[in-house]
Length: 247
Image 1: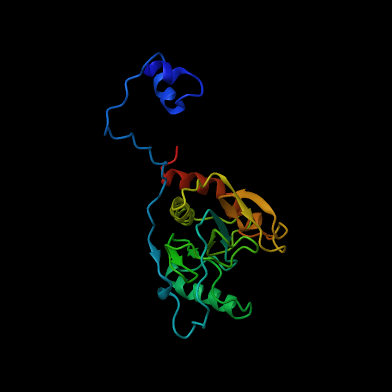
Image 2: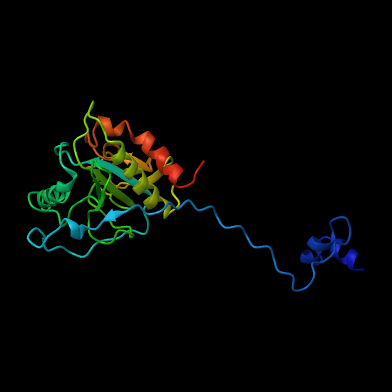
C-alpha cells in the first residue's frame, strides 16, 4: 500500500521521492548523521614579515589625520614604484619613507601616505598607510580603484632597462599572496572592480575587469610602476599563486 501511495502522481510527493526509485528504497536509519558538505578550498598564504610604521614615522614628521577607512575585503593589488633614486642603502629606507610621507601629506595635502605597503630593494616590507596590517584599509594609491584593493610600492624607479631586484619581487609576491589569500582571490585571475572616479581610466561607476595583481597604469593614466617592473608582474602573479598552494 505504501508503494502504491508513494508512486501515484500528486500523492505524498515527498514520500514518492524516497520510495519510487526501483521500488521501495531502504529508509536511512533514524538518527543517522547527514554527510557534511565539503568546505570550499582555501588558499591562504602565510603573512610575510612586515616592519610597522612606527619604525619610520617619528613625532617630528607625523601629521594629524582622520581615522582610517576600511573596505569589506581586499580582492586586488596594485603595484607601484615610488619614482625615487634606486642606489640607496637599505638601512636608510625609514628616512626615504618619511620623505615620501612628507611629500604626500605636504604638497599633495593627503591625510596619510597613500600606499598600504612599501618594499625596498633588499626585500624588506614596510607598513605604509595607518589602519592595521591585517585589515582591509582603504588606501590612496590608484585613483578610482582604492576600494577593495591594496597598494604596494616598490621603492625606486623601474623604467625600461632598470634591473628589478629579485628580493623585491619575491617580497611583493609574498605580500600579494597573503593579502589576496584572505579573500581566497587567485593572483593570476581577473577581478571586477568599479571605478569611483572619472579621473581613472574608467568613468565613475564603470566596472572593469582588471588583474588581481595589476600595475598602477592598468587603473590610471600613468607610466607607474615603470616598464621594467611591469614586465615582472606575470612572474609575481605566478609566484604568489604558488605561495597560495595553487597548481
